[in-house]
Amino acid sequence: MEHLIPGEWFQDLHWAVLLGLVAISMFTLMVGADWLVESASTLARRLGVPQIIVGATIVSLGTTAPECAVSVMAAWEGNSGLALGNAVGSVIADTGLIFGLGCLLTRLPVNRFLLDRQGWVQFGSAVVLAGLCYGLWLGHGDMAVVPRWAGGMFLVLLGVYMVVSVRWSLQDEVQVAEPGADPVAKMEADDKTAGKVFVLLGVLLVGAATVVASSHVLIESVEVMARRLSVPDVVLSATLVAFGTSLPELVVGVTAIRRGHPELLVGNVIGADVLNVLFVIGASAIAAELPIVDDSVTDPFSREIFLRLHLPTMLLILVIFRASIFRAIRVNTFQRWMGAPLLLCYVMFVIINALYGGGAS
Image (tube, rainbow, N blue to C red; front, side, top):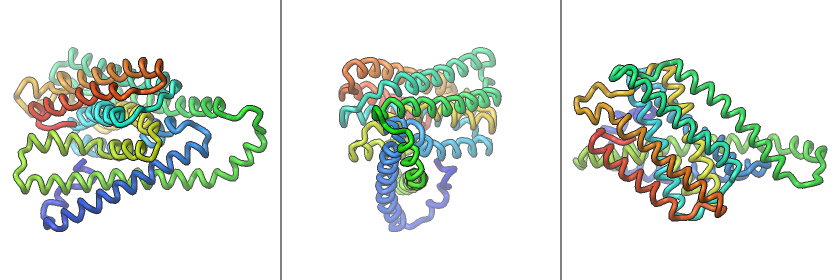
């Protein structure tokens, strides 16, 4: 996060200025989330597709793109080791924290088409990433890196995923269309609303940018104040760092529930997970090869924490999520208890990662 808004900008600010930034960023964070959620909901109605599909594509892309830019810049500047941990940590936080908390707050809706399509892409992309990393590590040991060709492969898969998602959305649009509707009248209505769709897209993107920027300002300001109060690094890494990476998605998810659009949370989590693997890691690996083992530390567990903790936790959480999907499809809703094991896995991951990894995702 510090690469998007340099932390040095906040170091010498007066307490009053920092407190003011916290208050302002919290306000703009909520306003931006409202803009994003309402525009996404209206956009779904205009396009005639389920809101959960918009959440899995446009909304997730809007909240993930800045994180991708940060990871690519970090890799380009020589800090390529951050990209893998940040991306996988975001998958863990999105599914464990955000979806888990969302389940505990309310019964989340089920869209069988998305869960049977994008949901399997979410799981499959994570399995491919894990298999690639473990295979490279077995073959090259501590010198293993995610090569540029793998980044290119992920970006190609991303392109295929986006094209197929559009086709799936069009199929959903046909399925929800009113029987006997006049196609000519629909085309005329589409022409009239085309301009409004672009306006809604603009509002959505502005809302996403506001959410992301406000989250960065808020976390940086609070971190500076915490360090001035001599809060231990282990506490900071277990709270601000872990919480801050997924704050935009968390606020959007809670706002979606508050505004009566919980399906946006489900779609955003699934879409963001796919993009974190295919988009963030793919683009970062193109910028620079990504080391799988951290050779800057000497402790064996910490050196291989990505292999020993990050990847296993990601796979465990996604297996639990898939099991929840199977149950949810049968009862036509995500029941509240389903959020508890996901949230517990996330909390345990944050604690272990803070103790042995020097920071969470």
